Image 1 (tube, rainbow, N blue to C red):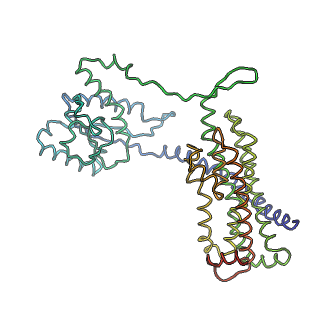
Image 2: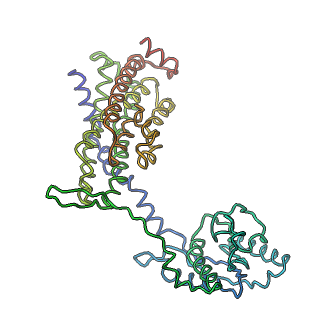
Image 3: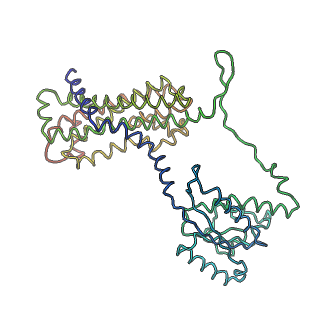
Length: 465
């Protein structure tokens, strides 16, 4: 045991007493927040060129054109700047197309072709054609999912123009650019509904309050303090607990496990290539050498976890949600991080022992990476519905249990005790089996030279030694 601890201490010191380790401590938080920083940076680099849109208002009196012009004016004055006054969105310019040019079907087709060619040349962002029957009140018999809304999904995406008399056609080559579509969606429905009500002798301003649906608010549960006062949980605290805590714990565990376990493959390959392992095996048994490396990796992972967890707890205190990082949650996090690093690290050690160079190790590492990332694929379901069959299955599957169970445990109100204990036992038993199997592979593969071992050979090493 003393030799194992000596090797573990050496591996730990070799990992943490390097500049790369210090750099990784700083870079990892930056990488995790890189999405937010990149989004802010790209906003400054966004294309803010003025975009021109042609409008064909075929409604009676072109009543909706004025509504669109007013919405565009408001957008250009206040909707294109951020809080610092910097322009981050494009201005819009409107070009009116005389609707009388579309009186005849053949002439209308020529106008649409002309506008389409201008869109393709980049002279226009899009052209919008407001159908002549948009303002007409639909009859109950004619109302259908296709005609019930102005901007809803259309089951006839390529319908001929004559089928869209009660619709608003938007044609553009840039179908993913939706700023102008959103502007239309915010401005036109109220104007169209107001006109339809006016035709029935009803003022929209009179019934607008009646159309407001009752609000559904997310409120906290009541709880009684020791002094007898009854208080309610705040939405901010509960949302932070339900989303931020489990996501943060899973991401933290994934990062520290990867940093503690994944370098073991390269470490083993290096010692094989430089014949260092042959010298070391003159003093220690192969299993002791492997366990020393694994324990060193676990120590590195727990060191990172302590540093980042301390920072996360400080932020939780500042945000007022520290009560959701309970001692029970922290203890289970330490347990699953240590056991998970042992289990995954054994796989990485076995992968390194089975090959002779870094290039060959890629094929061995890929299955291990897929196993580690399995909980990440189901993370959304784990947080949204932690008691679903999928969540329970993933958290009881030994190879995904460490991260999956932490995600479920951190979502209030937690998980049943039997599932938590069962997952812990399954992970421990599986880790023992994986460490034993990796030891059998390591004993043979650490001295192997020439070519990578095949899967059948790995199975034979595990069974026969």
